[in-house]
Image (tube, rainbow, N blue to C red; front, side, top):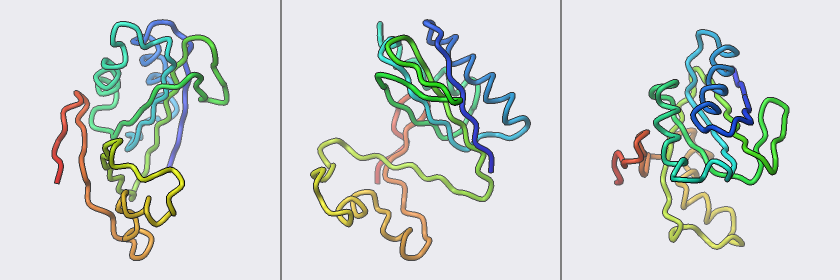
Length: 151
């Protein structure tokens, strides 16, 4: 198992992704990441820049499972970037681990004060805790944002 993180303060989204992916590839060596997690500051939100991120990441990491979100500040590689452009990526090479994404519409989320069991049922994770069996995938998105399927 190998985790690596990188951060960029480039004001250019494509440059920031390239800088981070170069750093991650250098640190991971020949290992292919199974999971990519990305946080991007609101400075990159102009002109629908966020919609470009999945394709930029796919160019570098192909079919690695990718998830991301926007943030006011980002943290990576032992650094914190706030109040200026920032992009942080974490990559994980997880041999023997099966990562299964799922999708939940905002309207399907339990109340924030709900019991943990309610959240477990919503995320279909109770079977994992009890038996080690992975939950079924509820929905997966491709790098281009199109859904793969929803049971």
